[in-house]
Amino acid sequence: MFRSLSLVVLIAAAASPHLRAQQTTLPHDRVRGAVRSVDTRTRTLEVITGVGYALRLVRLDVPADVPITAAGVATLTLGDLKPGDVVAVSFGSRTGKSLAYSIQRVGRMETGPR
Amino acid sequence: MTGPASVAALLMILGSLGACRRPPAPGEPLRGISPAERARFDSGRAVFAQVFTPETGLGPLFNANACAECHEDPVSGGTGDEVERHAAAFHPEATGRACDELPAFGGPVFQDSVTPLLRAALGIDREPVPPAATAVAARTTPDVLGFGLLDAVPDSAILALADPDDRDGDGISGRPNRFFDGRLGRLGRKALVPTLREFNDGAFQIEQGITSPSVPVEGTVAGRPLPAGTDPAADPELQAHALVVNDAFVRLLAPPASIKASREARRGRDVFTQTGCAACHVPALRTGDNPIAALKNKEVAAYTDLLLHDMGAELADICFGLATPSEFRTEPLMGLRLATQFLHDGRAKTPEQAIDLHGGEGTRSRDLFRALPAEDRAALVAFLRTL
Image 1 (cartoon, chains in turn purple, brown):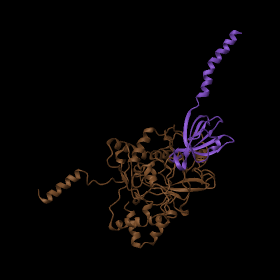
Image 2 (tube, rainbow over the protein chains, first blue to last red):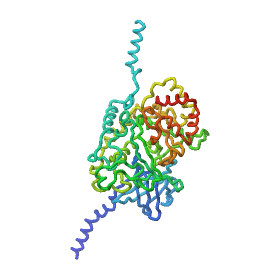
Image 3 (tube, each protein chain N blue to C red):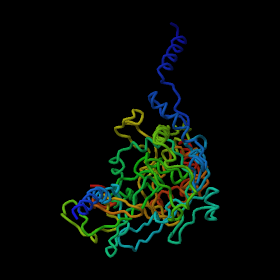
Image 4 (spheres, rainbow over the protein chains, first blue to last red):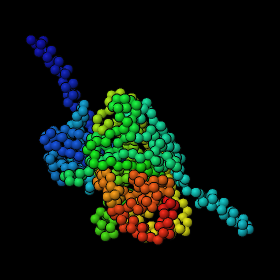
């Protein structure tokens, strides 16, 4: 029994770094652009950005515990974000899905960056 | 020393001091660049002229196989006769942003050519414009001569010319466009793009389908991923150094120098101001501090304020950024004499036709031009043809 338990402990010890690695190796990226759409039901956010005319749409899943902030306001809800808001988002990507880690509203397109 | 000999000696001295040097010809760099900058300029000219093939990364969607294929007349960096398609969806009734540049469908630039592999895979000859588009715009090839100087004008100088609420009551209400991160735009027919470097780097991807460290991802086909095997070249298809020297080439291209004005053209310069043209086509901007001495604190006779103006319903096409369909950035008139077609879509074949099509904020100046005696209209056009 002790041998079986030891084997289980050994296997768990060998596997846990791999499991921790799976949780923390999502590539980290940032985008700063304008909100194109917000869907509070599916908790998704689309941000438009680009280089020159090479525009890019970043679609993000926004978990409920993601901090959403703005200058002067401690926290916002996803629904507080509107199309045309300029946001800075840190996110990670994993095969076809982008997951937001934090969102900061930095201004509106019309008024320029703060 | 006798009189004629003194004059000859003086001329030799002045010549050696460069006081009589001719201005740069179209396609030449700005005066006063360093040897290292000249080397980057020359290297960049080669990148600008580089012809791409599918094997070296062209496409699979593209408008041209080289920058110089379009920007060729009269020299690399000049204009061209190619016209491309842009599309967007404008919904002024929408809450939030009224403009959708259609990035989800491959917009706003919809390429007119495909590689054989893509044609075989999808059976298309050009990128389809989605049904969501409310307008399709034709866009001619601008010359990029002098764009480095436009890029070097401080934001504050452009914003100082803005009067979005027409507080001075002159009927002109120029306003800035802004990129999606809020930065002031200045380049492109709707002044969306903030910097020349982004304008250049983005162009490789949208015009030639060339990926780079700046734009590492291929475009889609109307929003759908490229079919497997249709883009054989490994990404990035253009390396960072090529982007740097290409930018140096475009940045250091001198603007076409005005040619000597006849008496008629000098009269036309006065008419240009009297008819109010200079309210938007501001004769000169000043650059600010810049790491490149040739771009630093220079006056550039660009004849633009780099702001958006409502040009009326007849010229309206797509929205872009904050620009509504009828708003366009004031076209820089430097280099106008090299153009063979005028306005954003080339519908005007002479400067006179272009003036005649000015509407919206340009209506008053257009009407003043129309009411001029024939000799004053001719004088104005003669002036424009010196730029």
